[in-house]
Amino acid sequence: MSRTVAVLCAAAAVAAATGSEIRATIDDSLRPVTTSMGLAVANSWIAAVEGPEHACDQLRRRIDVLRHNEIDAMGGMHGSEAIGIEDVCFVRFDGSETLAEAVAQEPRVKFVEPNFIVTTQPTFDEDDAVRNTKKRKKDKPSDTSKGSDPLSWGLNRIDQSDLPLSKGEPFQPDYSGDGVNIYVVDTGLNVDHNDFVRRGRLGPSFVPSEKTAEDYNGHGSHCAGTAAGTSFGVATGANIIGVKVLSGGGSGSNSGVIQGIKWAVEDQMSKNGGKAGVISLSLGGGRNDAINEAVTAASKSMLVVIAAGNNDADACRYSPASAGGNGANKGPITVGSTDSSDRRSSFSNYGNCVDIFAPGTSITSAWKGGVDSSNTISGTSMATPHVAGVAALMLEKNGYNVKKARDELFKDAAPGRVSDAKTNSNKLLQVPVRNGGPPTPMPTRPPTLPPPQVCVGSMCTDFVAAKFGPKFSNKDYISGKLVEVKGGDSTGCSEVGKKTYKSSDIVLIKRGGCDFFNKVKAAADGGAMAVIHYMNDNKEIFAPNYYGKDSVDIPSFMISFDAGSKFSSNSYINSEVSIGQSEKKKQGLRGEPSDAA
Image 1 (cartoon, rainbow, N blue to C red):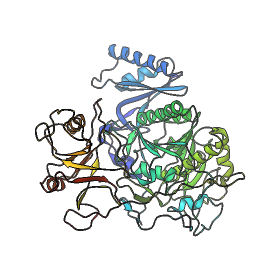
Image 2 (cartoon, one colour):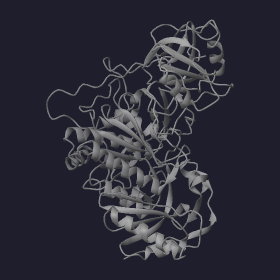
Image 3 (cartoon, helix red, strand yellow):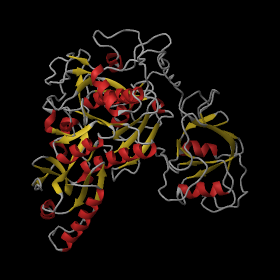
Image 4 (cartoon, one colour):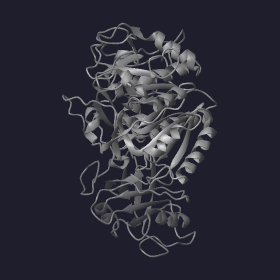
């Protein structure tokens, strides 16, 4: 039987309405309004439909008819889309409350809800003042051969059943999650971070204002680092896929999250022979049925792990946390947070919807920005990826069998350890132990390297690689001859002949005149090895992007105006130029040893 919609309040909501609790900034593009159930996107709705995805396509066509019949008098936005996950489907549509009420009466429609706003859920420690990025010490890499404590105490806790925490013992579980995919559905991923080398990749972005899944917030990278980072993580052999559903401010919509979940399930099933993977969701909002049904549907083929929330309240009042409570048998696994004394963290939600606890107070992990950036923050968001990482280990151990992996995850959890748990499921996460045989060798942590640079002679400067063309990682290195633009005007925009450049030429071009892509395309067609753009003013360098369908097969880079002006002088043109890491000791632009210009 269809249910009617939640009624919108007249007043527009401000970010502080819920954002102040969880420190997220509500994106203005979401057009937030208050409803009886929480913040929602203005004039945006989600209908849940009985039946497969084609039933939602039928409903979309019916919505068009209702509009033409002038049931909807709103005008303006009239978009809609079908989103199917396993055997359930949803239709997100724009329209007035009148239209939403009409849709709710249609056959096979189970309910219509506002398109609620969801946010990240970190609670930042006052003692750490950790909103700013912290840098890991480069001269103290983890040395597991001699024995050392893990970089985050959470890893130390989940490999022993009782306190006190061990000293001088590295985190070395018997499994690494080798080959298992963990989809971190969050603010994106700092894919260039050393902790994700060769194992991290970017999925799509479902945030309309941010076209790629790069992490502009840090929250997603932190969660990914805990789940599977080389230095900070549980499953150091797992693959990490960043799916962006939350903006740089940490907010998004239910429809975006549902789309991200749908994509993760389909990506896993289509590319991995139907094997199971892990979905990690450290986000939430007010209780609602749409996102709960989505995560429950995804749990039929994946292990789905969800943050309980940071309200010191009953997790059953929030979504998707309220979809938990039966995680030991089937369905999503909702995670509460503990501190280093095995107490429920002061902020952690509790109640019958919480399935398991994991460390979540003052957890150190990867962050946005540099290749070795880190941050120490607290929240059930930080507890959740611990469980996601262990879920990956369990899938590896049990041959991707979801039921066996789930059963063992809860069987191995330490019972009764959490004080003030306020739940019937008082279990603390533990890593799996091998049933006989030697332990799986742990992957070695890659060395912490200085920032890659562009160097001509003794002069070096920082650069950023373009987002189009071949991927240029932090460990890549090329060298060639620095040359000026040939075969056209000085802007580099003109087409040139196929043999204008030698295959060893790296072309230096000043910004301006046409799109970056056009300059790189011209140089590539002329036979060059690579292109170095330099700024035409003293603004901060950035990574050029391209959204067309054409492609290039050479890398390109951006450097500062100061560095480019120096490199363009006669004393550097036709000299050898290197780009990337080098074992040679480089000199700064002023002739002094330095890491950057």
